[in-house]
Image (tube, rainbow, N blue to C red; front, side, top):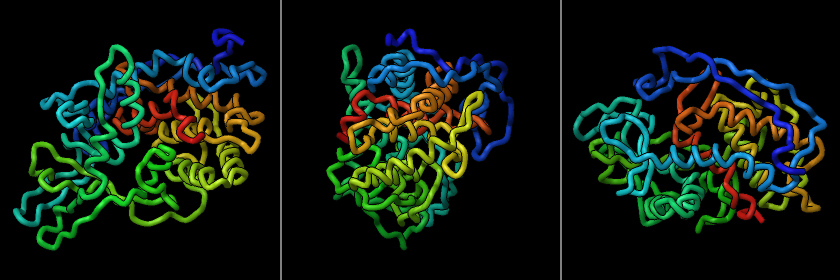
Amino acid sequence: MPIQSRRRFLKFAATGAIIGAAGIFGGLEALGYFNQPTSFTCQQVNPTATFPNTDDGFFIEPYQTQINQLVNWLNTPWVPASGGYGFDSNYQLIRGGNWPGYVDSSTGKVFQSGYHPGMVLIDSNYILAKTLDWFNSQSGRTPTNIFSACSNYLYPPSSFVDPALGANATTAMYNGLDRRELFLGKLSVWPRPNAVYQTASQIWYLPGHTLNDISPIVTALPTTPIPNQPEDMEYYAPQILLEYLNNEVEQAKLDFLNVISHWQPGCPGQIGGPYGGSYTSRCLSFTIVVARCCKDTDGTPFWLLPNVQPVMQQIIDSLWAIQQGDGGIPTSYNPPFGVTPESTGEALLAFDPNLPSRFS
């Protein structure tokens, strides 16, 4: 059936704006964290609607405008005086982020938690790198090498330090086991993770690129495996992908369908606990990734399993419903947090035309 004839489930109109002065980190208002819509007008679901049955027809073709806006947001050049996010062509990385500060034990200088104009390897750049590079390889765009830049910093012999430890600091190396590797299928030169790992916060710096430097480069590193139990989609989506990559297809399908059964439609909708989390848009994006990448034993993509497609359409519409006028995606909409490279990059990953082929 033609794309244009498909019934859309969620039509929205943003009205008003959240105004506030409080936040976890300083400077949120200056970064646009309070310019979020307060209400949406929605149309009820028609569960008998007919949908396209190809990945491209269902996930890509109807959303060319929204996808292009994501790419444009991530490609916006970084302006040093902006106090925000942007692409730094010199480093081939996206700058800007909120992460913990520290007291430099060698100088006593205090760096506050909050916004820093540096580059977060995992997870602001790495998870979106291959996808954004591909979009930027298309006609009319400036090519980027974000994945290569991340790889050059992450993979040995690169080592990272925690500058808060000073003379007692030990170095750490990336071992290739970050859970975000699982969202990239088998693209990494490293063996894929054998578990879903927790990570420490952004505390590991490339030597010479700490907060003393004008160009900090920081990353999270994997720590310990999480228990194999339901978690929000930050951890549960990679768990399903790991099961799938380990040929545990029936278990992966069962887990995915449990997530779908916890969908709570609304304006916009969200995934209920335990699979939902405070990073609401991340839950939606990661669920779309799982739906597109995994196939049943008979070759049926998970998003084409019985009764899944209407829910998946609502999930897609709910994600696009919170896209901001500048093209970026906020991390959450209840309570509202601002647009970041993480949330915008995760949404772009979810609508990467090449995504299913990484798991084929």
